[in-house]
Picture (cartoon, rainbow, N blue to C red):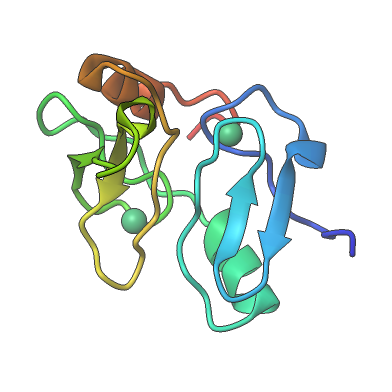
Length: 122
Ligand SMILES: [Zn+2]
Ligand SMILES: [Zn+2]
């Protein structure tokens, strides 16, 4: 299924081909593994993905590129494999739940990737 009228990932070089819809999850970027805001179905997910909030920096971490709410740093800890540990920035708005690029192994890399907005100018 091809996605029509879906915007490129905000964190990656503009390329719509990298963006896909995953049923029951939402729109995601295959390049950086970002997940956009959750929607009830494909149309709702694409609509939320295409929304762009005004960029602002409250602290070290920029606001969510989709809904404009604050975002925080999270860590993935896999009990089995140390190699699975990584960091990502996630929107704190429970209606959005968008996640930024997944990075290993430094937290600073996740923040830097989240703060890099290449897809579009606000
Ligand atoms: Zn991306
Ligand atoms: Zn958000």
